[in-house]
Amino acid sequence: MRAAGIAVPGPRVRVPSGGMVRPQIRTVVRDLRAGLLGQFRRQLRFVASRRDHVDQIIAVGDVFAGWAAGRSLPGKPLVLVATAKSEYIHGHSRIETWWMRRRADHVFARDERTAAALRRAGVKASWAGNLMMDAMAVTGALTLPRTAGPVVALLPGSREDAYVNLGSLAAVLERVAASGAAVGLVPLAPGLDMGRAAAVLRERGWEPAERENAGPAVESVPGGDAAFRKGRALLWVLEGVFGDVLQAADVVVGLAGTANEQAAGLGKPVVAFPGPGVQFGPRFLRAQRLLLGDALVVAPPSPEAVAAEVRAILSDPARRERMAAAGRERMGPPGAARRMADAIGRLWGWEDGL
Picture: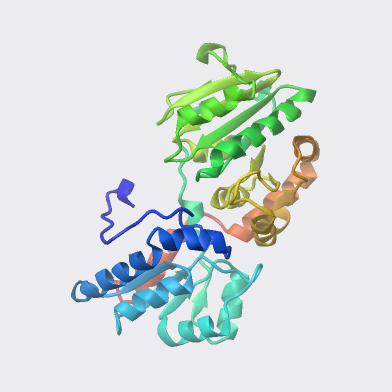
């Protein structure tokens, strides 16, 4: 939001989990020691102090976020964009449903199956699509000749795990290129360091490639870029062109959360495997498989097995199309933000929408 010029007031604190709180004792204890409870109390007090400046509430996240906002601002109209739960994995609890039925003017569910379940429980709910499909742009900075070989997007994630994940993903690209030239594109998330990413690759035998001799052209990307070669594999690490990378990819190998889902929503086949880091473990992967259905295939955690799955998908156009259709169906088309904004405007009488 700050990047878009929107002020983000109120207290904040960095916690070791990066906000990815999982039901693991060690993770919760570390976050509590870092001040998670104190942060929550300060945030509630801050929101309550702004009650005279607030007309309506739009809460985005889980039901707890909506409850906290509603508790601090009693009586204010409230819409919940419920991104955290899905009937494909585990639906909302009875107490969450009771609260939504009692307090929310409307709930935008994560998917149509979840919206239907909420409506059956008496909640005013609908599905307008997934906001994350609006959270990426195509800059037109990538020019990739089709003669360069298949293009594999490698998604290492956006947190500290990304560096160790990058090493595993690069090993997969090596195996894919064992049977012919292949291009790997790594969109480096904001907050990650290009120098550290390059060091990971050099430690694994990847040699820096001169820009003019790197094959496919990368033109004036908004951030930095670096090219590496190993055997017949060419790997670009890029900043500021996430949407372009997904658009250019023939297949995606991802150890990421939202990024994997966005790739599936664009109709890209996604291959995943239990990663070496903390976040993308077997439990997280099982949940993502339930969420994305046939858009995602899970491979054993070895470079050879993952590469074999990638090659199988690349050689089977009918399978690629089935995976693409499944991803688009689960995530919905772009434009969810506009559809939600218009619906909220009509709900609250903002001149028939926005």
